[in-house]
Image 1 (tube, rainbow, N blue to C red):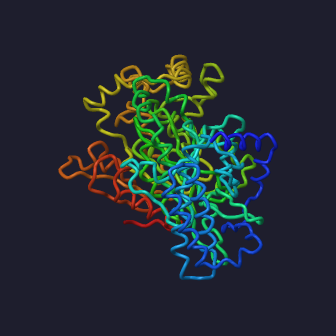
Image 2 (cartoon, rainbow, N blue to C red; image 1 turned 120 degrees about the vertical axis):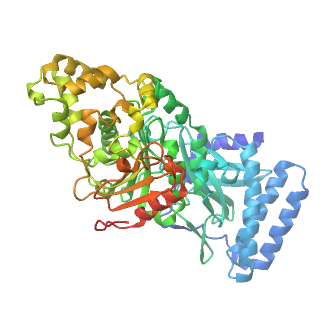
Length: 562
C-alpha cells in the first residue's frame, strides 16, 4: 500500500487534509452531500443489485487491495439504494451498506496509518476521501481507530450498551494532550471517544468515508429519511479501563506508594458540557475510580441520564485523614472549574451531584457541610489567630478544620459510608492497618509542626491519638478519635438533598455490611434510605446501582422516607 501512503503524505503537505475537515454539522442529524448529477436516475433495485455484485466480487478477490475497492463500490451502491424512496429496499440496503463499509474498514485499519487524519486514500486506483465532520472536540490531531465490537467489555462493567443503526461503530483513541489547560482533566491513559463511520458520495460522485460523533449527532439523513447511527458507548470506556493501572497503585498507596499521588485529581470521561449536571464519583479506602466502572457504564448506557448528566471521576490518596482528603478534593474541583468555567457562569456549576462509596461518602458529606467551629474546637482550645507557628502552616491547618459547603452541590448519594466511624478501625485488623497504612505529606507535616508548637492548646485526647495511632485515614475512621467524633455531627446544609444506601448481611451483629454497621451508614434527614442484603462493595451490586439510577432520575423533591 505504498501508493496509499504516498497520497496521504502528499495531501498533508498540500494542506488538503485539513481543508476536508471543515465540514462540521450544525444539527443532530448529519446530512450527506448532494448526490452527483444523474444519481437520481439510479433505481433502488439497480443500485442494490450493483452492490450485491460488488460484494460477490470482493468475496472472491484474493488480492486485498482490489477486494477493498469492491467493498467500497458495494458500500456506495448500497448507500444509494438506502437513500431511495423505495421503502422495500431500505432494510436490505442499509444492512449491506454496513457490511461492505465494515469490510472496507477492516482493510483500512489493517493496512493504513495507525494515526488517522482527514485525507485521501487511493484504493487500487479509486480515491476515497476521509472526512471528519462533527467530531468530539477533545480529539485534536491524529488518532487511532478500532472497531468497537472488537473491544472486550470487562465483566465488572456489566453489559455492553450499543445502538444498532447505520454506519460502523468505532473507538477513536489518542494520548493525552499537553498543550492546553483542558489536557490536565483528561485521564493519563489518554482520550477514547465513540465514533461512527459510513460511506457516502460528494457532489461530484466521489466516495467519502465520513466520521462523526454519534452522541452529538445520533442520526444521519439518507435521502429524505433520518436514520439512527450505530454507536457503542461502552467500548470507548472499556478501552480506557483496560489500560489503567489505578487499582494496583491505589493499594500500594496505602502502604506508602507514591505513584497514586502523581495521578490524583479530577478527570473527565467525556467532553465537557456547560449545561449538563456533573456527577462526581468518590471512591473509598484503598480504591480508585475503577470501582465506578459498572455505575459509570449504566449512566452512559441510559439515553435519559446521559442527556442530563456528565460523569467525572476523582483520584485521591486514601491513606490520608478524611478531613485532609476533603480539602484535597475541594482543590481538585477548584482547579477543574478554573479550566472549564473560569467565569463561574455555567449551569453545570450550579447543580452538582456527589456519589461516594465508603470513605468517599464521608468526604462527600463533608463537602456538603458547614464545619462552623465544631471540628476546630475538637482539636484546639484557641482560635487560629492565637496559635504560634509559621503563618503558612497555621493557614493550612485552618483550611483543613474550617470549611463551607462546596458551591453548587445540590445532591449527594452515600453508599456503605461510615459516617459515624467503623468499629473495624478499633478492632485487631484496624489496629494492624494503622501500623501498615503510611500517610506522609506536606500538609501533615504542617499539622505536626502546629501541634508540636501549641501542645498546651491541643486536645489531650487528640494528642494521645496522634502519638499512639499516627495520622492516617484508618485512624480517623475510628469510633473514639475526637476530631472524627466532632465531624459526625456535620450534615449536609439545607437545600442539599442526600440519600443513603447501605448493606446488611444476614446474621451480622451489629447489623451491617461486615465493615460498616447500619447505625453508621444510615443518616437522619435523608431524602431516602435503602437497605440492601449485601456486603460492603455496593458499587458492584446491581440492586444498589439501580437505586442510584432511580435517584438520579428523580427531580429535586421534598424530603421523604423509603
